[in-house]
Length: 294
View 1 (cartoon, one colour):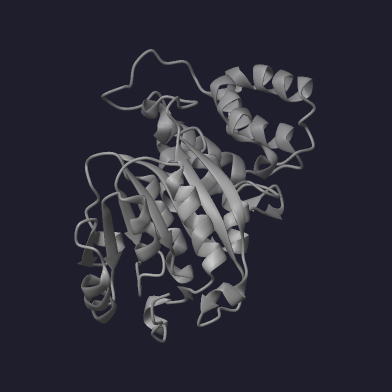
View 2 (view 1 turned 60 degrees about the vertical axis):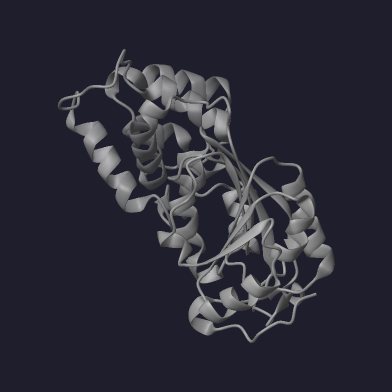
């Protein structure tokens, strides 16, 4: 195991120190293919074991002292160490895999950056336990998860106890996996409108899915949406309770039909308002039907 430095507060550094957890992460990455980009390589607790996979690794570390130290210890045949802020680091333009022990205070920003980035195929990430659960849709999905579900599959691969980190954080961690869908549930051209629709659903008022959807979809689509909700007995459920397939189906039923992506002004102000709201509120806690949906 590498020597651990004291974590720097401004970088949110809590290094993995548990061999069992590290081996589990390497095993998850081993099920994927392609070069690896590591977020926050730190002292190399993950980087060095990942070298066993004999795949190219680009280790991105914001702390210059740690980047220099790891650069001296890493195998140059497989690993390049880059001193950079991942949020501003240019990712490869070819397929690759993301892995990292994320600084807890930057998890949302990093996830937002990743989900908007092309080319990577899989991500294996250590986040706060509750974040990993909610992003994976366990106990109710977040708005961010619902907005990206048609294009990504989110999974929960285990809990990481606080004792697995040095220094020890105040909460447990979780292993969040994200896989880019090879066959998306919706076309990419509909992403902006779909994400606006999800935002309207999560922030809409009502005492159940039926009432909320009745206000979020165009008047000429409400009948079909209500029939589907009734047929699947979803009236009393909330937006956070839907899964990926249900979200895609609900959107198809509630969205006006189009044959191509409009190049000029949209059909009405509704899609524009939805997209603007989605950009403002695609992350974090929001009000949904009188309950929190973070």
